[in-house]
Image 1 (cartoon, rainbow, N blue to C red):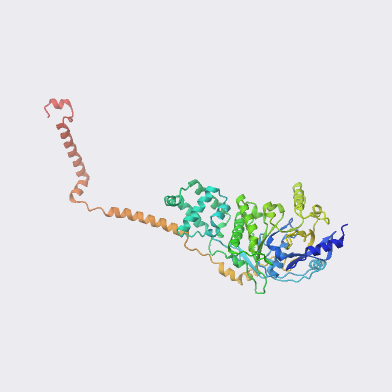
Image 2: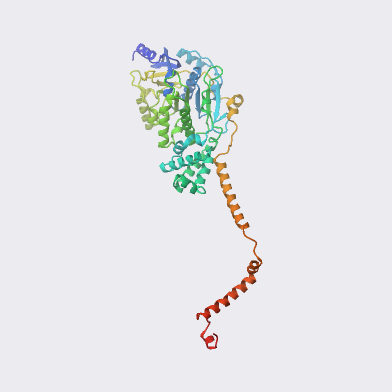
Length: 516
């Protein structure tokens, strides 16, 4: 049996930090919760990203909720991507029961029910603040990566953006993009090729099909105006806490491409807008992506590379990202290596593939003499997890079997009436609720084509009206009878002339009869 006192000192030294921290649970050894061994998460390293993993029903979402509450208490704004629709309860206080009372007593902490300042967001027509972005804000590189285009097609998309920039034609929604694509393939092809080079019609057709595929996943509701300002995610509530923004995307499970599109655009926008932050005592914003496999399952290699790059860079802007998923292998290795905090709930070993996953998960953690990690990973109780992270010096903390605290907010969803009340008092809902259809590429190009059509029609009309009124002679000659007389007379004259030249005559018999 490992020495308990030594382990207690190891936990105390490994999970006590100079700056602010979030208490998330107590250490366990041999199935016993050890007194005085609070496991804390340092705010200073929360921008080094993290992973919350475990099988269904092991408590991942509640862990996410606990960390979000701690960040809000420390005046750090939070964005929760709520795939399952069970995080809205964070806006209402929790209720004490015997299980919660017992858990907090074991850990040595006090349960204090609390409702948190929350904002409901939506990518579709659900209740809450509508999130939109324009095609221009995505830019040619990101649009190309989302659509999975090759180099030739990417060049064509870049040319479309350049043409629109040069001619002050806004690309706001997908309707604008497809209209421009159709224009350069047909009526505007000559104009575009004169200024920007040859266009491959096969490429425009392929791009158009891929845009339609994105539209079939509901992307039209996301692209447009007014575009969402990322600064609105980083508000502090009236009581000084960080605002918890809950993006309800329960309909995204069937539309993973739209979801990954939104996540990448949001990360890119945050990176573009926020200044370099340096070494902060706490992050400016922390994002939690629940059911993170949806971000990666349909992502192209180019898109994965883009996500990896943004995750590497965005920490310098003071933004932390936490992925929440059932299997650690759902997250690509290149991204997994960037995650400093790991919270591993129980995994289930039903198949040989499951056992392989458990072995791989165990290898991702620091070596320890206190636990048989492979074995214990299948035996962790609900609300228990292995935790390790990078400390303030960038050194991994000891691996600790932790009994986690329960959320202090409601562990259930809001009622429809409560959601209506939350939406009604939101200032942001009023700011973003009305869709704005400004004049953009669709209207400008349509007007351009209509103008060209009118000019062509006017030219035809003018050319017909410029003809002089026919004279009396012309009227006579244009008469069908007159034209027939003319043809007859001309025939006689022609035959006479040919005869005079010795080339005419109808037959030798007529010559013998004395004609000519």
